[in-house]
Length: 227
Image 1: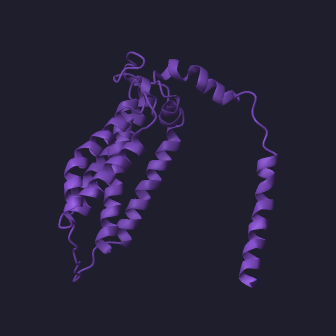
Image 2: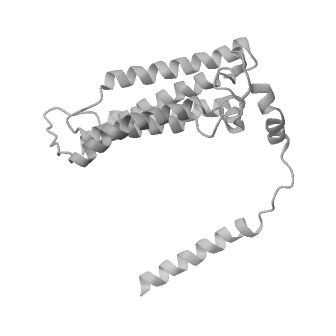
Image 3: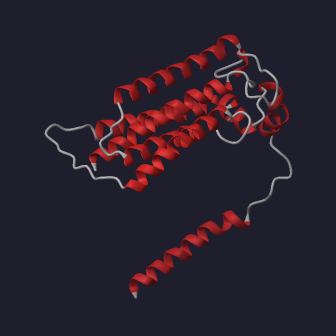
């Protein structure tokens, strides 16, 4: 009885705290100065049909660099904490035939879908982070279907490192050859709405997709190995 009373009390207290956030919100009748600049000039300046991509990759490219850095630090921390210890034996379970058959059919489709997401991020909703996660899910599905298989962490480390290095290089090229860090206009903008458009944005998103995919596969494989 006392437990239910305290639970109800905290629910009511939380509702009272959050109520002003709902009742006092006033809908905006116009965009702010920065948002209006992005909305009006984003497509014309950067050549990307997806305005969100223009903001995330170019206008606020340093924020994206911070997100990539946080993911890298997380991966490094998990790799350190879950590093393989000597004299340890891992029991492998056998995957079902349904999982194996489903994986053989779905694996190429999932990878293709992930590549599509980060190569078309400048045209449609999506991008490097989402595409990288989809590709990582395909590799994890493969590891579940074949429990004797383990990804080559040396290849994953090289892929993650090179993707991150080239990402920084593209950012510096934006400073030297265009208007700022990750400015995509040091490459031709191309024809608006086409796959080869928006300057360096497709290349940047491809690097982010590879980097995110490699990092997530490394994290999940280490977690699975520890279990």
